[in-house]
Length: 113
Length: 113
Image 1 (spheres, rainbow over the protein chains, first blue to last red):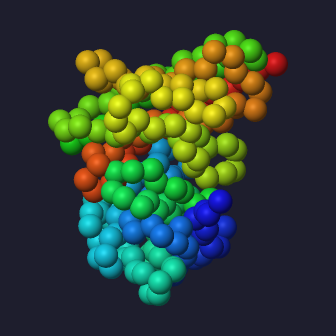
Image 2 (cartoon, each protein chain N blue to C red):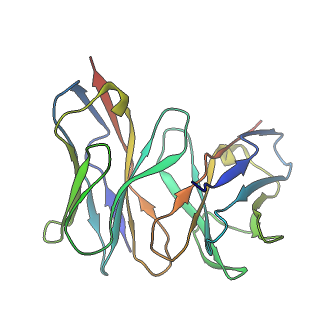
């Protein structure tokens, strides 16, 4: 069964550094999403992406964040100048249609020191 | 704006007992509803969903949920739980247009022997 994959599983970085979180969505899916879950809190929507552009973003997704689909398979989340409060689990998800079932990756745990 | 409320943060229950995890939502448009499960140190897995049609939906491992439009609820039930059902359960809503999922705060189901 096809699945969403994410790398790395755990990323440790120093405050102020840039990180890139990578995701490989399910191959025939067209809609891509990033969510985050701060420890002990609920899962929060960050951004949705379709047809090579952002379709919706949350208030959390400010200029510090960017997404890209650099090739036909990868979907990346870049966080510039990381802050302590960026420490969280970041989940990528993909869906064949909007509003349909989203399939989540296993997540990347980002720790900012 | 859409929102999801999970009324119980923790639900302790003995093995083989029935359980209900409550979920209420608010939305001004038609919605799709989902339950996701997160086992310890793992990502989110779809448990079941309501998109349209029959208001009672079932999962392959014995869970069921009923969409109640008048009460704006989508409670999750299982007649007899197992130790292996111990996990975090998230209710989520999508408006079907952007696909963005709005999650509830999560309910920790603790099944005791």
